[in-house]
Image (cartoon, rainbow, N blue to C red; front, side, top):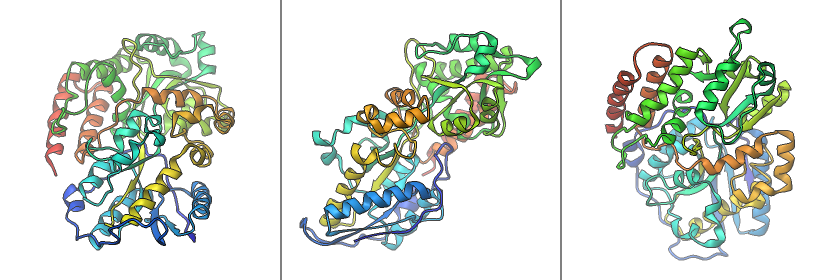
Length: 440
């Protein structure tokens, strides 16, 4: 049997969402026990919260029906779980307390540490170590997000993305500037942005968010990493971005915005994309979610890796996961894992992520006819898929990251608008971030 109900909406997760405290998740009632021995033929009913918009949900329905046809004893009860993806964490917390939590749920990557601390997740580390699973085909950032503390693997990657450099060919041609390549340095990037800028036509070489949101912050992380810096200390209890690497990262952006005046400072996190599409901005850093709209706007664009430092082209990724939950039932645990594995195998991922225009979960899918068709419809998607290899470091999933991100976003926004120095802004941001990291 296969049952489903429709989900409302699931946007690409760019911005940080409000996180519940670890204490709220951990303070739950006891689990209900089930079968202690595995019987693969026993009838099993699994609850799955999908977190997808209607189109993607329909594809999941079809895949679920195929899985049921292969395993008639397994019933997949698929439903949204909450009125929006952002509300799933709160719903999960309530379900932990009531003992009626699902077997599997879509989860933003930023939630995974808190989910693990709930003591409700399965640990599938041994299973995914099986060579047949081909765990190495997932990007390193996706792997580590599914292993938030490095001790347990609580699920499979669900959606992957990354930031790449998008360039407007019309703006470049108009200014007589050569297009970016995957080998560009930040010096190349800065020089091009300055040449592309034309005050008389209100054209800017680059755009950067100064809203203070996660959009502001996560755009900074590649600069930090490429300069050898870290977001957190090794034990993840303190911030580490207030460093020489952090100052170099922010100073580059400040010099472009203040000295060169080549950066459009976006207060809205939406205007820059519109100006890029209408040929008023030469370059933006964005991801696969931007390509469909550029195609609709008939914008002539190209895609490359982010510019690099000393050959390091590290990018940032915001992978989400399918979190798997433990009901102390050997049969439910077995089939929850099997369903997640089936869903994320290349054959099925080509029918879901690739079919809806997302990046493929696995590197082996890049040469498939299905992905080639998507690249034809959305040029540059192949470059973004290749750029997944540069997504080697995950964004932190600790509860205090929300406060840390807010502090960094505010600091960068102020500096780029000429208010204060890089050193003083990062020092103040680090103090705020460290307070946020202490909250449990």
